[in-house]
Length: 300
Image (tube, rainbow, N blue to C red; front, side):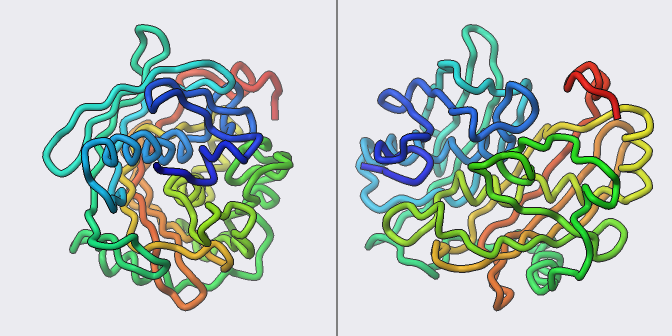
């Protein structure tokens, strides 16, 4: 039976689901108003996938990759449905709110002869990103204020990953290393221990979610603020590289890749203090079609 910090019954503020087919996400995992943090929305899919893998006779399974497209915000505090189907090397997953498809994803499964232990390898970065991942994994956290302090306002202060006003959040605050490059400290991950000294895919994905958007060049971010605009996660291709230990400190580093109109592309990495990468994600962010004031109920 799969159990992790995000879905463990002993966690009173947990992600809950019924036989892997119906979800309810608590408000603590929020991102934009009324919606789930994008990284959590993607990473939480590992829970029903691992349950199903065990039902399908895969005794020591690990999720090695999730590729997701978010069509609409996944709501907090409301039942949503999850359907899975086997595919080559893993599963396809659809998340729906009634008849509306919110998210579609594929998950790849790694198979182990024995239960994976902390430090064990799960997968590798794609060859074309290996140098970028190594560069980001080695970045130190700069002596600079959090990016939201530099811009004068946090766009989503209650965000589970990067928000300063979520009392049950992760408090991962990206700081500018160079224009288009950020790094953030995550000094203590122990509060998110699965109970076996590891961290769950849901938590790992949340840890590298926001950095992949906040690495947008500073001038572009300030322009969005002036125009009363904001951006939301559109796609995320996350790879889990090694089994992380919970009682450790990490850094979330990210770099800008490119921008194409309303779409912005970023790469983010979660690394240990010894520059070992544990997870990476290539993400697409989309500038929302509504203003920040309309979405959040307040002007800058």
